[in-house]
Amino acid sequence: MKLTLNGVALRRIFEIWNVPIPHSEIILFALRGAVPIKKAKGWSSSLELQLITPDYQHLRCTLGLWNQKTDKVFAAQGSTVPHKDNVLKAAARKGPMKGRGTNQLEPGFYEDLHKGEHLQGKPMGHAALRQTGYRFYRRSHHAPPYTSSDQLYFGNPYDNLHSAWNMDGQVAGYRSSGCMVVAGLPFCPRLPDSKPNQGAWKVFHDLIYAVPQKQFPLLLLPATDVWDALSGKHSGTRLCYGSRGDSVVRLQKALRRKRAYSGRVDGNLGAAVYRAWNSAGLLPAGF
Image 1: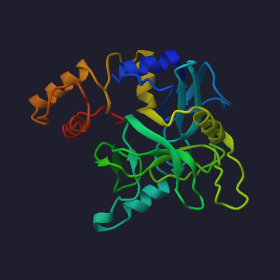
Image 2 (image 1 turned 90 degrees about the vertical axis):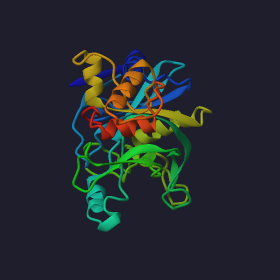
Image 3 (image 1 turned 135 degrees about the horizontal axis):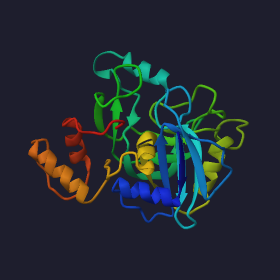
Image 4 (image 1 turned 180 degrees about the vertical axis):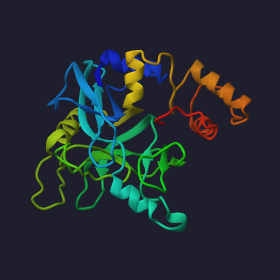
């Protein structure tokens, strides 16, 4: 299945998921389980993605940019899930350490990615986007994929958005224990003879560092859900962490009736509402 993305489609996605569109010049979007059909060299008016199931070994997600001023988009192959080896390593730990050290970011809307450095101060450190606030993520005690039965956490696991250290999306392997990564190789100023940024990471890096904007909002969603919504296969409104509005009010009231939520009915799908939604077993498939 193929998915076409442009400014119109992205506005529709934000509308369907009841997420107010930020006023930022550049907005990040990430689709878990889809890859660009063609490698982009910069901004374009539209792009096509191919849906594919993440296998936790290859780069099978899309990390994209939407410039609201020009209504142009860019997308790169990457991953929003940790590598399988790191998932298994964390699952093999014993006692209270079991599952720790590897995370999978929960779909949702996050507003706190800042320009900074991944592996700050270390030899392999390079310019990236740092996730600085609290977010929902899961840890697993088993082999991937992650499921809604895996333990849900809310905090800052210090995962970032950086280079995958893999130029070719067809080749297995990338560096992630929970960070989102973009295909390519990074320039590491503290490494002797480090080469300039390469691959899709170079384009992604250059586009975000070409603007004075320092903070970038991100909407992460399962690609199959986006395809269903845009194709009209399953019509109606949808929700994720960060959604706002009347649909969230209805969810809050439903959770109150189930005695899963006792907070305010304010139309804001924040941390307390998301925890209750998860505990009640009502999260959509893919979340």
